Amino acid sequence: MKHVKSIGLALLAVCLCACGGCGAAPKEEESGGALRVVTSFYPMYVLTANVTRGVGGVSVRNMAAPEVGCLHDYQLLPGDLRALEKADVLVINGAGMESFLDRVRAQRPGLPVIEACEGIALLADDEEDEGEQHGEHAHDANPHVWVDPRNAAEQARVIARRLGEIDPPRAAAYFANAEAYARRLEALHARMLAALSGLPRRDLFTFHEAFSYFAAAFDLRVAGVIEPEAGTRDLADIADRVRAEKVTALFVEPRYTGSAANIIAAETGARVYTLDPVVSGPPTLTAYEEAMERNLSTLLEALR
Image 1 (tube, rainbow, N blue to C red):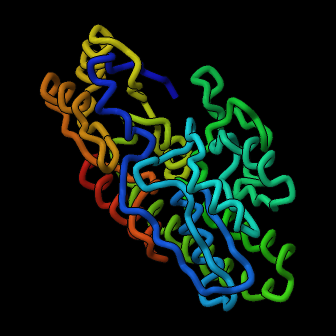
Image 2: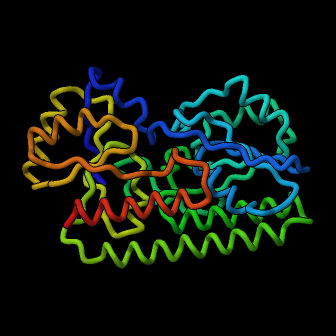
């Protein structure tokens, strides 16, 4: 994967949601029960809600506010600390996504933390090491593992396994829910892979580092990532490259205004489409699957 630097300081303000955008806050599932689970951000909430679906005596609350998106530079707020003070377990993505984890462990040294990416091979976050896999706690790893449905399935299994260790009386219910959900996600991946297999174009030009796992899952290629810190000259260079490579589609994310993408599109004739890395959305059990189905429709339109 080649990284392509892009938009300048003048466009920085429109990229503040580039880590997945802003969306509706996941609501709490409260049952007033004995096990209080807090999740770090939206995708972990959706996975955990599926794992605990219908299990009595368990509540699931999401911590980060909806406008946060990804958690790379997130700072804990007083409300977060209050939620964590009452939590029995915290579910996180891991792989460096939750930069505040050291503070959580200092505040609640005995709080069990489930890292959902445990055991999943991580892709490098460095353009020179594309495709290289790192250990579980690598600092230069790309943490967006859940954007591959197969990884999301495995994360659900990890959450269920660890919850079962913490809460043995409900372990069988967690395992059954996780396996049913994981099989749905694996079937979703198979359907999407088959539908995308015949596309003549395989390149993605994106505005965030979230799609490396997604591209690998569906035999696509992230040809360029347009990053928010580059200047106007870089924007012109990107437009030149888009023309030279006959790129026809640029991909932004939900709630991202796409100003840089629109500038490049106006200069080159490429069209702007939306891909969803599922970092915000409604607090529904099928939200992940619905977002991926929309992504499939978008890619079929954009890459034909």
